[in-house]
Image (cartoon, rainbow, N blue to C red; front, side):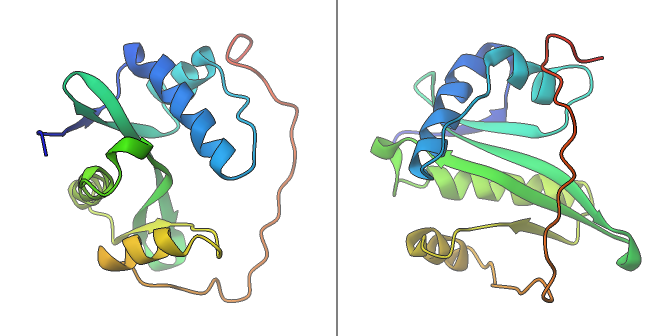
Length: 160
């Protein structure tokens, strides 16, 4: 396999990352609504909400991961959550996902995180096997329910 480089995303990567977000959403029977300016605002602007890393081979972006900092205050513990992991179909099983996940773990270690978390669909057994192979363990959420308060959405164009 040719060398794959993992690096932090840059603003000029946004069109390709938005394309890949659409492909990931489609895989999950969803439709991405994100636009380039939204991605720049959310991840690449002056106050990024997520950290994006990309896998690059021969000058082409072939995968990305979206990383979000988390904290468990009651345990005084920092965590890194992998919100997205995507690798182009023609690059799968070539170490790209593994390299992205390794970089995520390295960033978490540098930030003194106690661990890296992620969610995976129950039916996505190949992803579960991949993460288990990397050392991830299944954990239960102690019977917790996820609750969401929906707020009026501001687009990147009208955000503060």
